[in-house]
Image 1 (cartoon, helix red, strand yellow):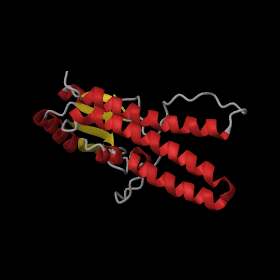
Image 2: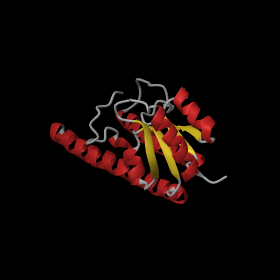
Image 3: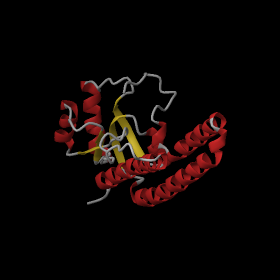
Image 4: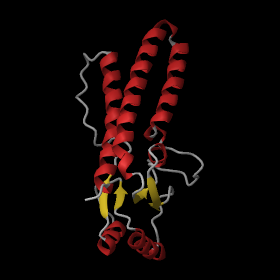
Length: 194
C-alpha cells in the first residue's frame, strides 16, 4: 500500500461515505451497461447499500459529535476523507504520504505542540509502535490507538462455494459498515474525556 508524494489526490476514497456512495453509483451504472438484463437487481443492491451507508453515517455523526473539537495526530495521513466528512480535528500527520518519518527537530516541535495544545491521542495504523511514536508517548503521555483503513482486522465468514451473489454482496456491505464503525469507535475511545 504505497503512496505517491502528490497530495492532490485522496487515495483512501472509501473512508468517506459520501464518496463511497458516488463510486457505488458509477460502478452500478457501468454494470448495468455491461449486463442490462440484471439492471433491476443492480438497482436493488445499490439502494440497499445506500440505505445502509446513510443509516451508519447518521449513527456515526451522532457518535462523534462530542469529540469533533478534540485535537489529535495521525502517524500516516490516510484518514483525510473520514476526518473531513465527520469534521474531526486532526492537527498533523507525523509521516507524510511519501512514508518519510519526522526528523529530530520535527519530533521536538511535535512534543512541544502536544504539550501546549493538549493533544491527547495519536492514531497509528500498525500494531507495532515505532521508536518515534514511543518517544512521543514517553515525552508527553499521549495515547496511541490503532486505526485500520484497509479493513485488515475485519472478520468475515469463511467463503463457502454455496454462497449466492446476494449473500456475498450483503457480507461486503456489512464489512464496509463495520470498517467505518470500527474507526468511529477508535476515535471516540481515544478522544473522549476521561
